[in-house]
Length: 150
Image (cartoon, rainbow, N blue to C red; front, side):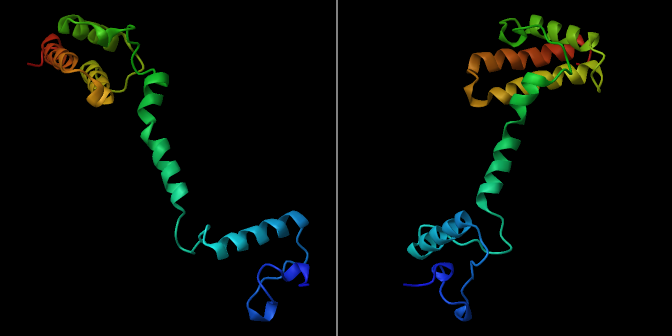
């Protein structure tokens, strides 16, 4: 019967790892890992490479920034349902009013209003029906007119 502290990787002089001094739980986990490694169900980490799990986790969190902006941003106090209206003039007027009344914006009112409208259009992406997209694009033109930037 092999010694318990050298079961996993063989004798020390052949490049094995001594588990003497390890806790029972650590030794057990190590033995399971080595068995999985030998069976091919686990890949050993290579030095110098980042694990793919870490990259994908970072990518997911950076991809959801727009949802957080929609919930938490207080750049403009928009009237509820402003983008769901059918009239481009009313959408533009509401955005203009919100942008001019807000003191928390960094840019001028026109840029803030246009940014919010563009952000909404881009966030909707392919899920935005053609009719809604057309209405919102017309609201952009109307916003330019209302701010005198034609």
